[in-house]
Length: 371
Image (cartoon, rainbow, N blue to C red):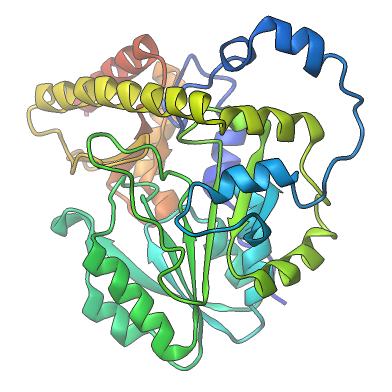
């Protein structure tokens, strides 16, 4: 089995995100505090008195029911709670991919599954979102990529790093292509619920029998520290995934499970959703104004959802070199487009504190003007 490719983006962020003043590599909504999630009496009377033991290994029944309610016609026994969406993606890939299998992967993408497929001995076929098309894919190209050797079609929707959202027609094209080959659709939907102005992004769940959906509380909910993710899919697939889950984290942290139930309760969930939308709408306006001020040094397609955006810059400099210069000279961290196979771009997060975003953008502009 081949060695794992370096996960360049995660290594870059892990190394520097806590060492800079302006972390624009952050990809989620500004995290909420414990005090804003639950009241102090609940912390004293419930959380503080809870024995720190093991909980339900597949997630508590209450949490699985709350997650199932996010998807039309889903049931609690179709849900496996994981330690972040990262574990959910790992388990799905580990279960599906054997040496020699082909996986058609939407690119650009969060590159975890790309590296895992190759590490498990599979081959990646790229289904590209095109910048010149406003980050729209070509369904005809997908038909050509899916063959009898295709094990899965992997989607990230809403997309990381572009913030693009597939149309209903594009989603159906992906489902039809996978079904023709007897392949699975694996849809990373962790940014579902982080729409800027549009309605809630439709899910892939329920569009075919062989569909696995992953998600979590890190991005749209502003709760990355809870490390709560999930897989939703057919019951027999969930049993196979549970057998692998026994070899990884076994189960979610008990206190995280408790707090996730609070976050997904109807009252709190509505409040978190409104907070995410207002934050994204306000901050996206700041980014739009800044792009205009750059007078052509930066171009983009504004994201429809998520807390990230891809910026194409005009300067003739490698994206990793630009990101390093921003880090060293300006104390700003961005993700270079190289990490997604897209030199000439940088990814920024705009779900963060407004003052940090404004100053980070100002400093990026200073370097771009100098170039």
